[in-house]
Length: 381
Ligand code: PMP
Ligand code: GLN
Image (spheres, rainbow, N blue to C red):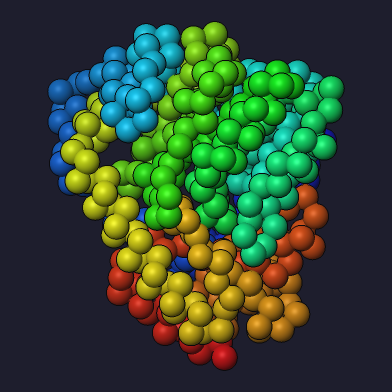
C-alpha cells in the first residue's frame, strides 16, 4: 500500500460489522437499515432488469430518466434548477461522487478544510488526491462550526471546503446563518465547495438548506446526494452530483476512469423513487424521528450522555459516565459486554483524543431490534 493510503487500514464500519457478526450482536454501528425501502421501487428495478433497461453499459452521465428525476427533485424541494444534460451526473453512490469530485478538483498540496469528526472516506479521498486535510473541529456538546475559526484556517493554499449537512456522525444540521457565513468566506477567498447532503431528507429540527442556493455559490459548489439513505437501498449504490456545468464536467472526467458508468437497472428504479409523493419523504422522516427518540431515551436510561441529533440516523453519545475507557476500546468490548455493536467517533478525528469519549449508535433499525438493543445496553450499568 502506498504512503498516501498506508495510515487508513480497514474502515471502522467493516471492522465493527464483522465484530457484530462474529459475536451475534445487534449491529448499531454501520449505518444501514434492516428493512428494505418501498416495495414498488424494488419492483421497478425488477421490471427494468426484465425489460433489459440498463443491462448493458448505460450512458456515462447516467440514464436520462434519472438525470431528469434528480433535477426535478432538486427543483421540487429547494427551487434549484439544473440542466439534466449538463448539470447532473449519476455516480456509484455518494462515495464515488466524493472521490471523483476531490480527484477532479484538487491539485497536489492544495488544502481542504473539512469538518471534524469527518466521514471516513473524506480523509482517504483527500489523501488519494495528494491534497492536505485541514480540520475544522465541531466540539461537544453542540457540535456547531465556529466561523471565526474557519476564517483563521483559510490560507493561500486553501482550495476547497468540504461540507456535510446533515452531519455524520454528530447529527448537526447547518442553519441558514451558518451557511451564509460559510458561503461569504467561500466567495471572499474564491474557494470551491463540495457538499455532502446524503441525509437531506432526515432532518428533525429546522430544515435542510442546500448551500448551492445561496448567492455566489452556484458556480463554485458541487452538491452530492445518494439514494441509499433516503430510499433504504444502500446496496444499490446510486448517487449523484449536481452543479454548474463546468464543475460537473470536471467530476465526470474523473468518474469515467473510476467506474465509467453506474448500475443501469437501479437507475430506472431510483428515477421512480425520486418522484414519490411528499408523503413518502415526510413519513420516512417521522418514522426515523420516532426511532431516534426511542434509542435516545434508551441510551439515557442506560447511562450514556446523549447528544440529540438534529438530523441523520445516528446518535453520538459520551461514554464518560462508564469510566475513562477510550471509545475504540469501549466499542471493541461492547459486543462481549452486552451484545450490541457501535462505532467510536475517535477514528473520525485527526487526533483520536478529541473523540476519546464519543461513541455513535445508529437507529435505522426495526423498533423491536432497537427495543432489544436498549434492554441489552441497560445491563451495562
Ligand atoms: N456520505 C456520508 C456522510 C455518509 O454517511 C455515507 C454513508 N453511506 C456516504 C456518504 C456514502 O454514501 P453511498 O452509500 O451512497 O456511497
Ligand atoms: N455511511 C454509513 C455509516 O456512516 C456506512 C458507510 C460505510 O459502511 N462505508 O455508518
